[in-house]
Image (cartoon, rainbow, N blue to C red; front, side):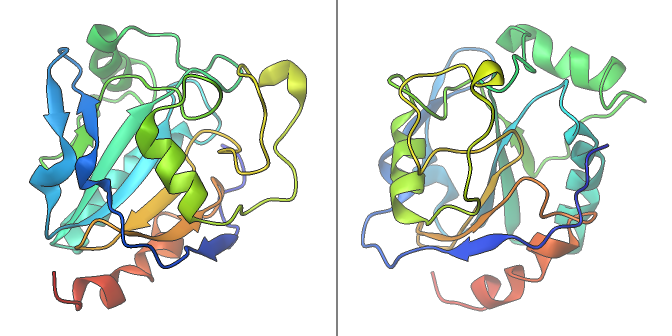
Length: 199
């Protein structure tokens, strides 16, 4: 596993807009509006099955069990070194039996959605909003030969398992570098403030 004990994160800008205006696709092809998460604290993560950070999946269920009121929305993405080649209908099977494997399944508070593009011309509008609301956590994006989108912009998601913490009003509050994790503790320390706020 890659080093996940970093502490790189940025506080997001104050915004009036929120994520509730966006729709996402489920693994079975239905459209879902994110307004159903109104009043919840959310952790949004772009994920991939064949990434050095994939072992973070093993912490998801326990992290949310320790923090009632927080839900995790995972968005598989194949733009970083092609590390998520599966079709939507194959994703859960791959997670259960391949990586992280060992019969891993998401808890009821871990919601895995259909694949999206987080960067480039076809980036999902939700990611366009998140990136424009939260300063970058790294001074470099990465090596061009493993990044599969155009154009590359300074605000882009840098790799799989970058995270955005969303408050109960749907506003992004903190952006986390992919390696800012440490079993979930690095993001968990930001939960209490948001959980104590009014929706």
